[in-house]
Every structure is written in structure tokens, then in C-alpha cells.
Length: 234
Image 1 (cartoon, helix red, strand yellow):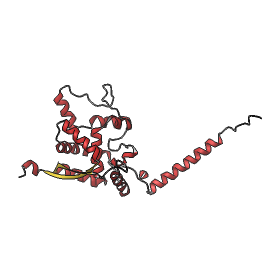
Image 2 (cartoon, helix red, strand yellow):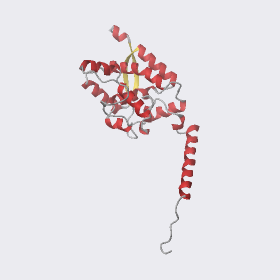
Image 3 (cartoon, one colour):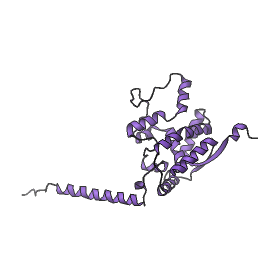
Image 4 (cartoon, helix red, strand yellow):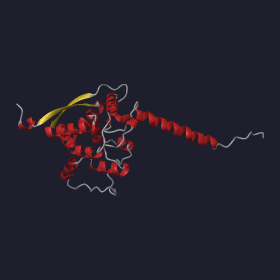
């Protein structure tokens, strides 16, 4: 029989990159965190930041398809199908997620996978994004230090898990966390990309042609400034 708490929840079924999600699950078990409750809180807290980052932007249908297809291929040719995962969310969280996805034409599962990889934030991943791997005591990003109290430190981290990461992203790259461009191998985890980055679009072809002309112009300048090689016997 469903409890009152159960009746306040709804099931969201998402497709996740399996190796990453399995590791994420193991981490949460080790931290004694309930996965669904934790993800519900993270998603609910992050939606306002997602809206702020994407204000005035809407993913084109071509970009949406490109991200969706890239997500299916995540992990390369030897990768298996994505893992289907069921997550229990509060109705309010599910409704707000659905609303922001429709408003900005997002690939919902790309956003969910993006949250997981950001929550894990391995040192290698952070270095690839040119973000710090430790919270530095002499940082100048306007963030406050963590409380000495262990429980208060946990409480503040759960209140906004991406607080320091978001500030570092703004300081280093001048953009919101959900507009930060990941390496091309992880384009499948994008919330937004311009059509210039989507192969096959007119914008992509125009940018490709501009780059080609710039390359030819640079090559011509280089050749014009070459010093002729004199014959050694001259």
C-alpha cells in the first residue's frame, strides 16, 4: 500500500550513460545518501540556475537532434545502449523540469547526465574544463568559506552542491555552469549549442567556409613573407 509520501512522488524514466551512472550509484551508497531524494533536491535547486543561464536561448530542432544522437553514441563504437533508470521525483520537481525542457527545447536526458558528471567532477574532468580541483582559501570569487561544524558543512553542501563550481566557472570562463562548453567528446551532455556547432546546418557550413577562407588568407600571407633560399654554390 502506498504511503502519503509515495503518493507525492512520480516516476521519471531517463537514459543514462551506464559506466558513469554505476559509479555515481556506488559513490552515493558510500556516502549514505538516498539516490532519488538527493537527485530530486539537486534537480529542483538547479532549475532556476538553468533558466538563468539559458535566458533568451532556445535549442534549435537540429541541435536537439544532434545532441540526442550524440548521447546514444556516448562512449564510442564499443559502448552499449544507455541504461534506463527510474527516478522518483516530487510532482513539483517533475513539472518544473518538464517546463524548462519545453521552454528551451532541451534534451532532458542530456541535462540529467550533465548533472551526474558535474556532481562527480573528477580531477581529470575539471582540468579538462580549466576549473580548479580544490576550493582555494585565497579565492576571489565572492564565495564564503565552509562552516567548521561538520553537520552545517554537509547542510550547506546539500543546499547548493554546485555553489563553488558555479562561482569558479563564472570567474574562469565568464559564463554560467550550464552554458560551459564541454570537450567535443561530451557534446552529448550539452544544454545549449549554436547551430554553428551542428554539422549539416547552414550556419555550420557558413562558419566552415569562413574558416577555410581565413586559412587560405593566412597561408597566402605566410608564403608572401617567405625569404627565398639561396643556392649554396652562389
